[in-house]
Image 1 (cartoon, rainbow, N blue to C red):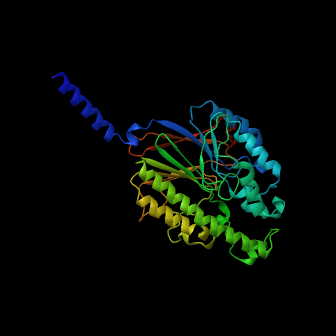
Image 2: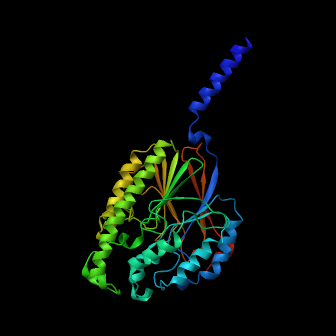
Image 3: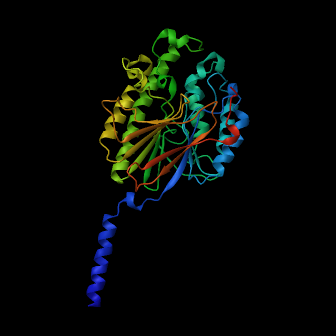
Length: 343
């Protein structure tokens, strides 16, 4: 009898083990989202210690910076990248960095110093993605699409408590796509030849980004992940319901994102879990369902845009696989950085 009980107990435990999915085994945790700061022109630098302290006193597992560690009117000197790395290393938890347009795409602008923006991209990769370790006083190992310090090394991926996280270099300024000769040279040190090289860069990176996107979804499906978090810098110009007669996604200045958006929609619709898209760029905190429009909403995709200069705050995202939504978003205002304007 005891042998029969033991056998049944073993069979029951095996059955339970077989049917426990990664979603059921995952633990509840939180992470931070921040970006588009500090902007020197808005006087943000003195606010950064307050922000870092506020995040350091939380229980976040890690943070993700969604691009733009400088404003679009300041120089792209090497010192700007060094300052950013020191800022990221001021966090106790691992700090994951995603590139924005201000630190490479827009460096061709004369008020940025008239740099070759493709050289700045190469420098960014060489200095900020030289290893598979994150920033922060505690490091985390990530997988890179390219070899450390080389092309596409800024596209990273990791899994935390059963959730897949993928970071992609999709920046503002139309994903570095140049639309015309006039746009090429306007307030810029670029030549037409350099703009042609930029368009070639855009096309190659766009293909690579889509490959990395699809690979992340494939991993999420294989691991039965309850959710996937995608972080980019650019606002993808989603259709705004407030402008009923205009579809912002049709604008030429958004055309650099079309292939990526198409892939994102297709992959999300083919995935049973929840998808969280994080980005910055336009500096207005929001949580919504932007794809594709009100008639064609993609129900399992949620967009979160973080705070940005001059609002130096952060977003806390809780992850609870036992809930239907999986992801739970909370704005975190740093008391010392709250500006109250007298009326």
